[in-house]
Image (cartoon, rainbow, N blue to C red; front, side, top):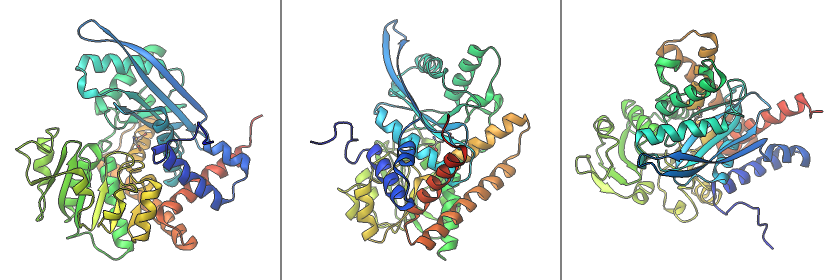
Length: 420
Ligand code: GLU
């Protein structure tokens, strides 16, 4: 009989666990250590009431999953999305642990989420929801314990409410409890565009390492939120021809290159809006365009066994977490499609979160150049560390990144020992 607790095939958790176990096999982990790293330290699920504008009360469900803190305080975003499920949050928390380790941050991995469509709430309802959720998870977060940040559906304004709520509860201001805050309350320059900027830095490192300059390359970007829109703009400024972008509603295509700045100025207007430049295409069309680079900056599981064989891009950069399922990846590998994995490609966000946290602790702020210089240094190191493992062990960049990240967490776990 099938294991009723096993994750749904092709789900984000299935993908994350399959990747983990394959890497654990290669690392030759003992059963005990394998179990320690496969499971979460703590999972909190809360059902909490929110008073809506019309006076009614609605109950929402949210989670905070803390995967592993062997290397330091837990770190990871909070997602507000109608499809948030505990299993997805578990998968994303695990990816955060490996991601922080791959780029050498002294953090473990966590993730949170509330099952809600934030666009369907008024600003007041969103604030009430955020504050109550923060109060609920307030017992396990903190600047030395677990530090949330933005993710899908959340932003600097929401981080400000989280910071304020936590601070009100403890009785003094605690800016370090979240990152991705507005500048006025201890945010850092460069955090908002950090993940997109990181995608550019990684694309550049890869272009240099493989001797194929980015200039003139054609690019399609799935997702036009915080990550996708910034990545598209940075790649266009680098001389790439961004021929297609999409959001949940659909996409736009223009063979001689879309004007990303115009499109960003129109956002959050949907791609399907008549004022958006380019020809209308679907998300499915975008994923299979004949481009040099496909940036996946939307959701999990976008490339899977149903569409992977139709992908024509030569290089996939994972701006989102878990956008390619394991069966999808197997098909891509057979087709010689190169994948720069999420835990390296989108690490720019959490790296600059780390910088925000450090700056806050020192109460001393860096300028934009300093932030970007240090971001580039960590990503460059991460890329070259991963590429070296990939060469030495003749494995994909994904497997190399997992071996590196998981290996570092294993080392920290062994060094600390098992309490008591
Ligand atoms: N949500 C982002 C991620 O998935 C950033 C997390 C953070 O800054 O802590 O990497």
